[in-house]
Amino acid sequence: MALDMQQDFSLSRIAMKAEMLDAETERTLAYAWRDNRDEKALHRLITAYMRLAISMASKFRRYGAPMNDLIQEAGLGLMKAADKFDPDRGVRFSTYAVWWIKASVQDYVMRNWSMVRTGSTSSQKALFFNMRRVQAQLEREALQRGENLDRHQMHQLISMEIGVPLHDVEMMEGRLSGSDFSLNAMQSSDEDGREWIETIEDESEQASSLVEEDHDRAHLRSWLVDAMGALTERERYILRERKLRDDARTLESLGDEMGLSKERIRQLEAAALGKMRKHLESHSGEALALLA
Image (tube, rainbow, N blue to C red; front, side, top):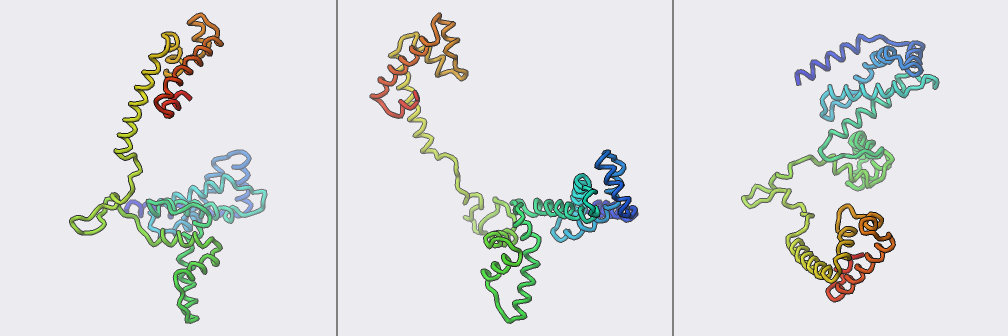
């Protein structure tokens, strides 16, 4: 923490000593970077407006993020602004940079607010940074009118005031009022209390299902071995090479090896599969699916 404070002070001191750019100098530096990728011009432009980035970053300290990290994110937003700034539009760079700096810092705060993602849509972002302020304002106004708003009425008013869907307000309320806790935390202080992780449904296959699958697989294997025994040696070889290898042989390669045409290999394969299908019909339709 002491180191962060020293870094914050150092960055602020450097920023406060930076030059103040007039509109013409600012435009000249912007052209130099955009047209010639002049890094010295870019550095001078960013340094001049770093005090703006630090000032905006400081407004987000109440969210608990380290000031040094906020300043770094603000600096990244400032650099993005410099890279995308078009001096031909006649807008001052500071006006344009404000939006990029704010967006960069807000994204960082939202990413680090909770282990559970808070949200990233424009609606969720507007709620995250404005909901508590708007709610406090609405409560003051209701108190002055002598009204007592319930939870649902408050959510409706917030929805209309910020211009976001009602369900987003309800969802953000839950996220902002909650807090992270370990899944290994105990549900109660009783000796027989369970950890929260024990209440999560196990989505993996149950033991009974695995035993049934192993049993069925063993039956299918025995049926296939029995059906293969009804084939000639040549037919078994073709099916092994065509169906049972990870890298199945082509009709052409088998034909070249056995001195037969591709069409003849295809016919032998089809005939062998037909024999196996007839043999398996007496056992199970599930076994027949293996030959599909």
